[in-house]
Length: 250
Image (cartoon, rainbow, N blue to C red; front, side, top):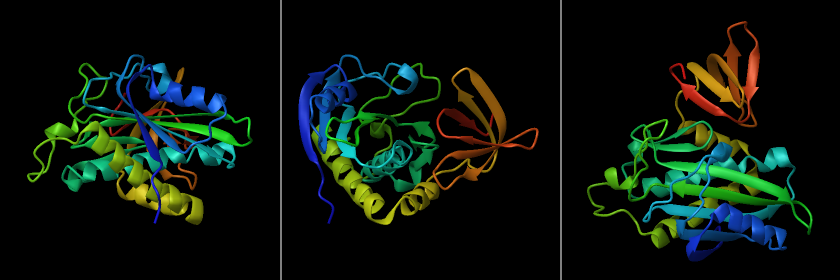
């Protein structure tokens, strides 16, 4: 039975990922979940601000690994599966899906975000800061894609969204299960479970990659989880990271 990492609950921090980085650079190895009720400088992917409304979950797992960087990056798929399990516990599972690579949706709208950062650890290997934000009580407004909160999609037998403490405990338990499977069985079982929750992998797609935007047709994912995008000229492009919009032009 996988054991969940300890959870450190803070009233406030600048960013749980930044907190994890400072601890790693000071020599800590984890595993440790750093959870904050409020963030003053939350961050999303590509340097975007992450709104930190009270009642939502802001959490980062600090851990270390001896895996090479490309393989260590697979934890982003583990994060998506763990978030999906958390939402399953309170919302109808039929509403919970994943958008490549790690956005977890409720009824088609974004309910969470993942930001994985890493660096060389003084003790050897890599430190990983696996940052996760989940809209439990409320969703931000004015986002590029519609966002929602778990509170809007609760099952009939669930009266209120979970507290930050309860959500963190559920997330930590689910993450430990998937992490153990990854470490003992490899990436394929993780990828299989992830693909079972993911749609849009076989149709039109547009990928924004920094200063470049490419358009084509998604043809599933490679064995390492990279998105396979067939371009208009017939060539195949492997997308390892970026903002991807499925089924329509960006």
